[in-house]
Image (cartoon, helix red, strand yellow):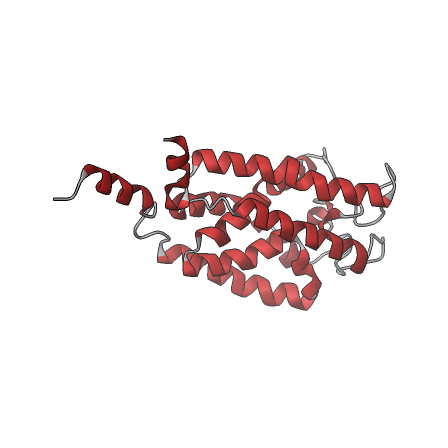
Length: 231
């Protein structure tokens, strides 16, 4: 006869849902990615995938098919807060009250409509990630791993990628806002190195960590680590 302790331990260590991600979700997201990837590569080039949000698109594509809690958790902890800021700025811009200017490109008629329409994923991908984490569980290793990835990406973008310029066209510049929120001109509030340092420290501390704490509290944890910790 199985003991109550064994039953409770098995329940804790079982995944949140035995059948996790519906096939319709996988196919719909794959169709979106199949359109976005060649269009972005053709118009923007491969460096566009240094953006955190575009990295999340690729990781999510893999994560939904192999149903990896870690890959999906990486995307969630990394972009939920920044994308909330994107949504707020976009809504502000739509009513003529831009907040940061980071979504100015969405209202730039000189940019192809298809590109701007595809960029609408910034609005719905966060919702999809919340759904996926709820289905797969949250892997708390996401915070240190994504933070390390983000710092490496910021350094690459600052030292190796183009800085803001008003004539950039579709060339990805100021990737991940390492020179300020405008793609046309660098911020002048502080020295460039100070802005970069603020990004390196501030993103993990002010965006990724709070998101991690919320997900850890509200979402099922992979392997039941949260339940065990609270026991």
